[in-house]
Amino acid sequence: ARPDVVLAYGVSQADLDGFEPIRRAGIPVLVCADYVEPTPLARAEWIRLLGILVGKRELADERFDQIK
Image (cartoon, rainbow, N blue to C red; front, side, top):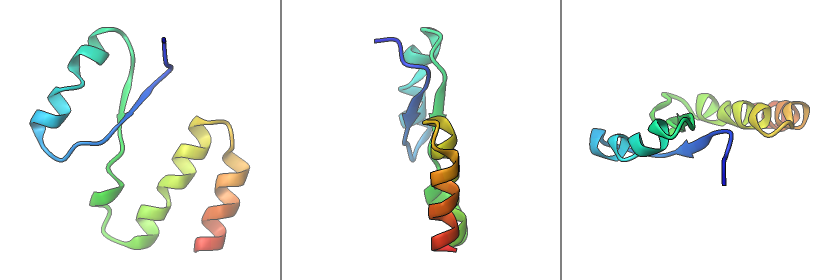
């Protein structure tokens, strides 16, 4: 498979370093760091980014507005 991007989760540098082979293969790695956001609303805003990535921006914005 040749994904456009890999969504990753990591809490340590060692976790993040584990994605280096993917990067070297020319595949961008997006670290989902919603867990470090200071407020629940900021965490929920990540739905908007994910909506953009999967071509569902309007739906993601609607869901975020419902949460807000």
